[in-house]
Length: 149
Image 1 (tube, rainbow, N blue to C red):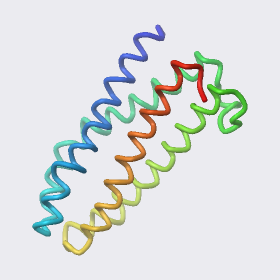
Image 2 (image 1 turned 90 degrees about the vertical axis):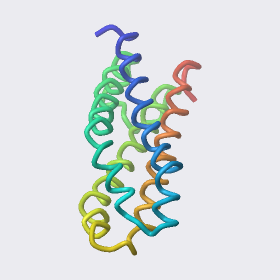
Image 3 (image 1 turned 180 degrees about the vertical axis):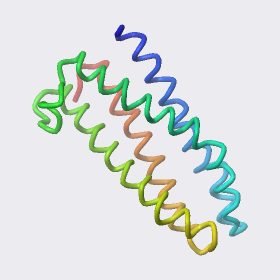
Image 4 (image 1 turned 90 degrees about the horizontal axis):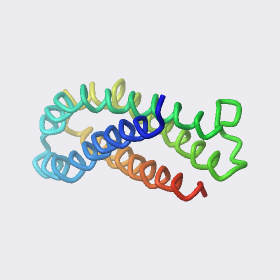
């Protein structure tokens, strides 16, 4: 598949994924914490999840396809030997961390949050962490243009 097309899909998906997390972290989370109202977060999550998860899936697919185009196939993941391998492997490590946060939120935090506003600080930690990871992944991806790091 054409690299430029993959890059466009990857960047649009990153804009949706990272932008959505910045929006919830800065636009919705402060109000939810101030009012101790989990429905503010839950309502946003309900609306954002379909497009956010689609974006994440597209990010993973296009990221892997572009990594292969750069010569970083699965046998080179997490070797951190070449500058491009370092970027790809770092982004994969951050992706796995994101998945861990997502699973924790989905199966542990959100079910409790629906019943108990006391879980808001823990949800806030998840939101801020995933937002920070998304921003880091975006920054790390920009290093591809310079040949890696």
